[in-house]
Length: 424
Ligand code: SAM
Image 1 (cartoon, helix red, strand yellow):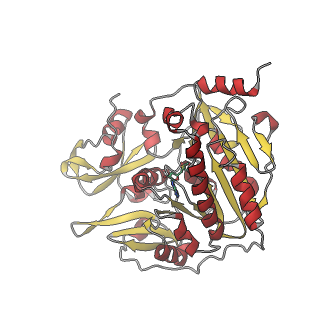
Image 2 (image 1 turned 135 degrees about the horizontal axis):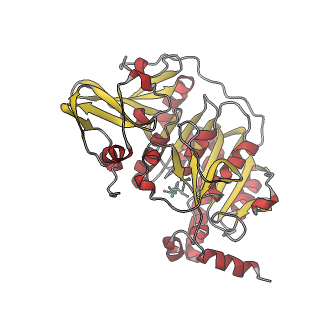
Image 3 (image 1 turned 45 degrees about the vertical axis):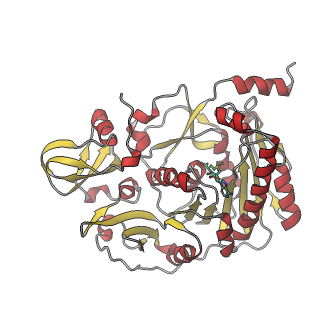
């Protein structure tokens, strides 16, 4: 019989599986074999050229490793209440788990996705804007900043920076960078982040802690220390034995020789104390200096927050909270960017096109064929006979972005950093 270690070693030389998580709020056909622990997850038989699929760029799905989709079970089994929640993802880029939570949270929830590293902020924004869920705020600050909002969130996710042992099959860099010193260094950072997460968590709220490593110093030992220091209560997840996860008293481990996915550790903890349902702000009309917004979105449900020259759509129920958040934490986007000023006029923001809150019927739309959609994603303009105003470019009913009419062509407004370079 093979020992576990040699089975693991063998699995690490194997090809990783390919999986995607579908966006339930965008119309698309789902393909592939279900990921058993995630209703939105599918394994694909092979790896398509994702870049050449306009549906990916429209946010219809996100390419995500299957073990990490276990966050769905953590949320469903560990959430403190089934109603709207204020959720904080402290280490959010590139946005896989934030996007997943945004798909699962009930309407009226607020998700704050924070990323410390400025160089990773752009990809976080891109992924969350493409997913298009309203009620998402993007911040980039040190985790200490959230200690200024004690008890503000009913659910906090710490998907911590780690030594990455579980990614060694997928990512050669994970193998190259590993050292015992890295494990110790990561453990210190994790300790600090958990401390701040705990302060920001409401009594009775839930903390989800995850890493993609197996080093006990970064996994069970972190959880154990938190329990000792705070009285945190671990929540045992019910998981089908056939899925292959290893369940311990302090968390769940995924190994690639047992689970159809990469290495992962997950723990769910409750903060002692009485849970109080979220008290939402009274309806707030918002200081709306962009009356056009009312044409784009339900005016009753959303309010508008100004940041520089951009109007952001915010869930009205969280308006006051977002103002408080912005005062404490460096905020990159206090909601979905909707309109911005250009040459003295209000123009729709690329994120608005991708938002699931946008009413397509308010816009002239142009439905693109596959090749035209790829040309649009490359930043090319579309020739026509008479183009005026702003049009919404779509592919298979999915909004991609805007074009500006300029007589004989539609000028491309797809953001330059998002352009694809790959040729078919
Ligand atoms: N949750 C993300 C997802 O699912 O796509 C992956 C997060 S990744 C494992 C950890 C993140 O923590 C990285 O984006 C990294 O920039 C960030 N990070 C690194 N050092 C940090 C620190 N000291 N405090 C907070 N975040 C940090």
